[in-house]
Image 1 (cartoon, rainbow, N blue to C red):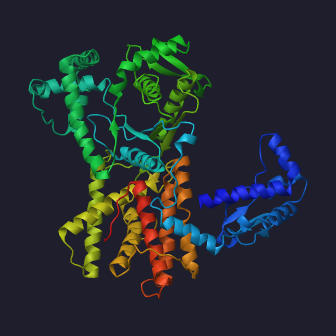
Image 2: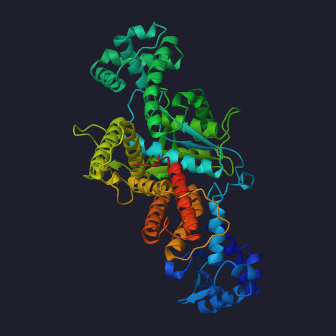
Image 3: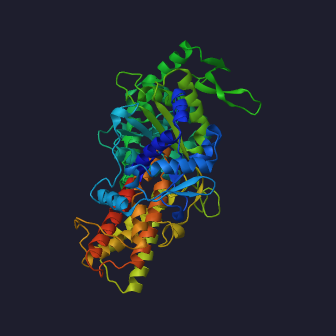
Length: 603
């Protein structure tokens, strides 16, 4: 109802100006306006909207809130455009005004939504935004080369993807960047180990499968910890790599390519699109960061390292903490790379991205790191006016015991194992249900449904939580057919698809809509909230708001379907109710698509 809310807000402001012209003129002189404070009604019995501004204006206008409300209502009664939208306003309490939309208004709005493939969500007018058509960069997922993606990468990957989908749907140009850890001192260790265990990889033109890269990494790390000579060789390999040694670069590329193939398998399963741009990409720009900070007088040498002392972050002693830009040995670190990335993304270089907004989706444990990086970028004046940089933090994935999710052996859960188990459990549940219902389905059907439900359940269980908090991972809860789960939403969609299969043409066009049941109006009102929910997600970057809406919509639809006959109804009620079913299905599908969650017609 965002469009209606905007129209009503304008009408209410005009009513306030007519009722209190002197106060309105004084407000204009000071560069403000009288605010009616229009909000959605807190309860259905209060109507569709509430006007709460009378309480705030009482002191300035030197009148009681109720008198102010009466004056506003008197003006609204003279406004024909307002009366086409709302029934007669009702004053409640000390000075609240309750507004209820007319049935004619609701029918007009739902009819527009039914005939709009965007379901009422407007495309943003980029010409009116401060950034214009400049892209929004979303930095998410970011696994490390030679390490397997684990459950810790799940949240960044699917939260970042869902935010990208919403912003793209609104009309923004979005650059999805995968800032993989493909550079640094660990590669000296890995290259040295590669030379020992698979030297042929560096001489043959053909790609060589190194097997389990995680095990490869563990072997290299163990050797590094136990062998001083190997440590020296590893450090030499880092220098060779940084200086462009061809053999070192070939080994590095081999490691990166094999990791990339494994990452892509996970991304394909999760339906994730990403543009890889690893740490190595920014390597040529690191010295520029150092020189620029030095020229600006921000760089300080402390115990041999070159640092910037932060103003926003202090230690326990209250003193400013340093952020190291160049280590004592001359090497650079994550902070240097992230600063170089900011400069590049904001177009400090001719081939840069020219982004208007940077969004970093990482765990909350990196909040101080990014606060420091953002502070340095601001002090260095690398951030153009109108550009926004924000960290989108998320909490930990915990086991049902409230502790960090790990395997029984105490290791971090591999993401592919987690997805496999979700699918296996979904298949087990499906086979039990099919047996109870006496249904005989093909193996292809069982595999497709199990895979869809398993992946959807894992994604939705994460996205439905407020990303800022930790959440407890439970296969039993996320795969349940009841409650705020993906299977519950999928079942609502399947239910509507079943109506179509039983003879209901959900694609029917209706010239005149007629509704007369309370459950119909409840469903219409819920459907009309979709546009505002999407705008909220865009502004707040909280996908759980969309999840909550889809769950509420499913509940409202189920109550409608349980109480109101659809296929057995007489015309025109039958066609009108089928149209509501179709719009509900379209809304659920679009909402779940924006979350990156697959859907089903049968399950």
